[in-house]
Image (cartoon, rainbow, N blue to C red):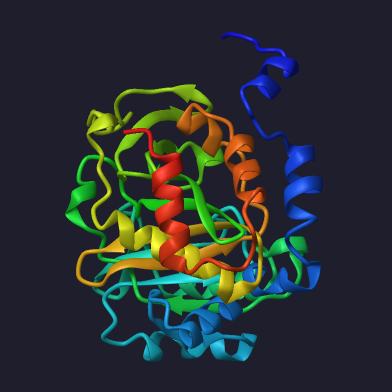
Length: 315
């Protein structure tokens, strides 16, 4: 392990937690807009109104007496996702990839029965997975049929692409790849692999797991530098549009690649983490400060994406 001084981090343009909160979030994200992204049901409705592609909403369970209606409601639905509307960090997300008789098969291969599904949804309504433990609702979404370009880059889960968007400009990107340690989830703090992605080309840069460099996926052995995100310009355009959709200036946009529908908006984050800097081997501050020198509100999505590709590409 190698230690580095705070002054060395600053010289490399690394944004710390205080700078992120005070300078970039507080000044660009009005608090009254937070609920638009903290509540995933609101985000989904916003995306629908804005014409932004997202996983289809199958239904919403909002009260306990509706829990026992789940099984007949899901009849004929082989795969689906249960998601707390106000959850964070991937907590409470249940991915059902198939059925085995009257039991449901989780993405890990584990089976749960009707009682287990009822308990999970009931716990979601009680606020077990929500921010602050407040009562919540359970969203039922279609399961992503993710593209085979991720074969070997992920383990029992859906990979996602996080793009940091500042004042509408995509500034840094990272692929989050699930592992056995992360239980098939794409959350870095749970052991997923973060792979920095070149804003200009969609190609992999560096990769980390538990904040340490890695070259290969820990479960599949696939070399991570081989990862190339297809339809990369579409990812950048979709991420940039989320600025107008929410009114938030500093935003983490999480996207997935569906095999038939292309890039889809998974969720948004008004307080995205900073580990993306480690995965890219570069600090965010120079890019954010370059955006601050530009005259605001005059560029279209296409112009903002073109600016980011021209100024932040490394390949």
